[in-house]
Image (cartoon, rainbow over the protein chains, first blue to last red):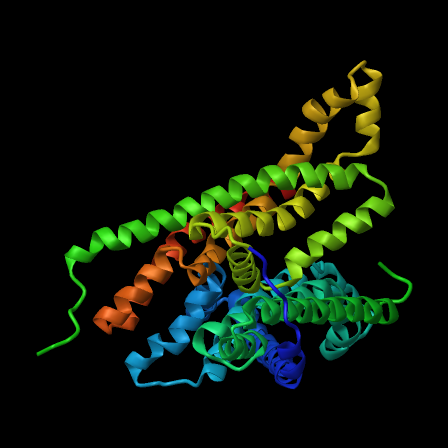
Amino acid sequence: MDYVFYWGVVYKAMPQLLSGAFTTLHVSILSMFAGIIIAIFLALGKMSDSKILYGIANTWIEIARNTPALFQIYMAYFGLGAFGIHLSPYLAVFSALVFVNSGYLAETFRGGFQSIPKTQYSASKSLGMTTFQVYRHVILPQMFRRIYYPLTNQFVWSILMSSLGILVGMNELSGETQRLQSLSFRTLEFFMVAAAMYFVITKFVLISADLISKRIFKGDI
Amino acid sequence: MNLFTPLSWHDSGFILTGILNTVYISLVAIIIGTVLGLVIGFLRAESNRFANIIIGNILDILRSVPLIIQLILFSTYIGAMGHPLDPFFAGSIVLSLYTMAFMSEVFRGGFESVLPSMRTAARSLGMTYWQTVWYIRLPIGMRAVFPSWLGVALSVIKDSALVSVIGYMELLRTSEQLISRTQQPLMILLGVGLFYFIISYPLSLYGKHVERKMAI
């Protein structure tokens, strides 16, 4: 059977697709920021001596890492309804992304922090630095270098995972594609263009992350 | 009259089918993906820069387009071309290729982790090229990347939930249907989450344990 490709519809719907792509970027960037902030607390909790804090952080991290992303989005969208919380599709995807991002990033941060030998802390102290200075000039810069690539990977991963918004009717790139193809029945064309857009977005993020890293980590590693 | 019937023991067979289907498609994808990934990882470790860039870019397409889009695209494509496939086959083809893209990177790292001096030593003992590959590089390299392999395999089990969008009756889809009948989303979803957790958590702990043991 022959299938006749018809790109005119897609071309006409380009503004909607682009606005979908914008929503995709915007939900992933916001969820990264929120995720980073929560992840710092989770990492601190996991390294703390308090059993309760450790327990909370550990449970959060392990649930986020060991259940499918789709399950988390369903949980936010359908499951929370049982508690009388009804989230909009955007908020459901956003909160699921924040939940997962913070779980994964907490482990990244913890690993980055623990990879720096404790002796560096004592050495800087013995040079007369204050605790703030030690973190500002010695520990955090090194830590940032180690978590830079995991951070970019996580960002790319959130862009890709936000595509699950299609299942809860969110208006990001995939959801928008789904809506537009159901108006015109040009499923193949629309999803091909969406795939190309995702490819371009992720490539762009990865390449610019690489360029930035060459600039800020000049000379070492 | 109540339109919705609550969850009962009669549903256990239905849920079990979903669980088995999830396990089945994940195993198929992991096995095929590992074999293909091993071949491609080896090719990438052996080929020159130019060939590497080409293979790398093709694999990048698989890695930077969301799995859900790949699934929809593939199943509509074969449908539009006049050869519709069973959701299981369509799903396992896409999931295996997706797994392959990640596995090849893991195995490439494994092959490259075996030092050239070790290969030279093996060759100077009179081993042929393929003997060094089979007896030296494969066992040593693969052991080094086992934790990463396990990580990818675990993510495939979790990603297999997405095959539900093209109509394969895996666990999440069965639970979706149960939810629409019973209207008890919380309980059913918690059960589903628990199932994935029970499979994934012990394996991830084991992976961490192996990693720690190798680090020492």
